[in-house]
Image (cartoon, rainbow, N blue to C red; front, side, top):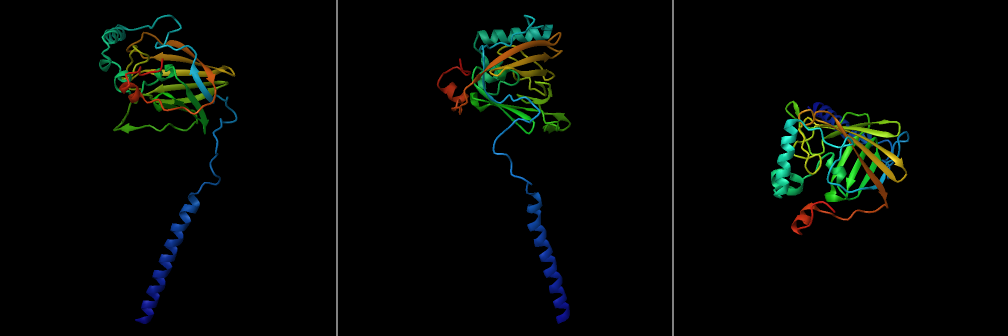
Length: 256
């Protein structure tokens, strides 16, 4: 009996020792080989878009290069409806950004006349906006984007899912999966099937261009282009600019 107990004790001790060694060893294996970088930096083979930027000519409207938005009959109907609500200042009936401080979405975020910072790290290009701490990301890392699923369908979001790649000095980004609760600008509507393609590049050291192509067959008879230009700003830490605070103070929702 004593021998059996001793063997049992030995087996138990060996098991516990092995288990303890496994528990201790797992975190060691999981540790990164090197600490993460303390500063962001673009990938060495991509242009450096980093810095603080602001739209050069403030506008509420995404102006087509061709001169006018090529609406379908249904798109024109929805646009005219929005204009009637705007005239009555009934923002809650068509514009959730103005009525509820929700994200303006893509591409409207790019029209806000306040500063934003661009960061490039691990192939992801991030836009951090001074207004309401809004943010968007373009995944140009060649890794599959992280998507949210409900059942078998993608969940539309305000800024959508943006996947990009570099063509020479130009970041080409395609955004889909956009909620139809947002607007393209202050009036122009879209459906959940809209596709936004951006070609973002430096024109010179202090000038950034975003050439935007809109595709949405339900509301537009053909794709249409617009160009937005930004100027580099001094580096700065952004102060808080909270949309709800603007509402309570009866200030414009977006900076003027």
